[in-house]
Image 1: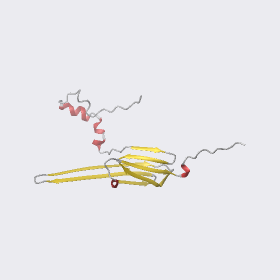
Image 2: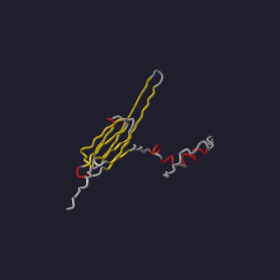
Image 3: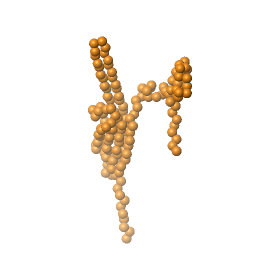
Image 4: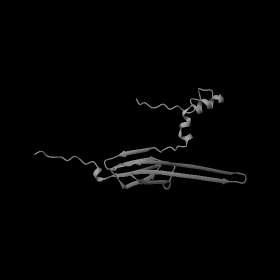
Length: 154
């Protein structure tokens, strides 16, 4: 059995509460809950999910970033850190005779990973396909695990 930390829902169970008691609804549901601590209210950005797999020869990193294009990403390696950021702005405007409708959307994130000293920073490859940004980071030859040497006893 796995234990999972209980996270109270911001609005509780509305089915068992008197929904129309609006005088107490905002006092008990909004201000006395964890709702104000969530990323939505405090301006923090949500980091995309990340998978890291180590093989004997390299590291494989997958970052889930759907909705972006290749040109939206900025990837750098600086001081042993792999820095990944993306930003996307979408604006649309529709003008008619008696109204104007404007819509916009903004998405951005930043993620940094400290690379171990055993990687070849000059041999990092990145691909973006189907909403997944993938990295292949090769290890230095001296860091690769070598098979044990067999010594014959004479």
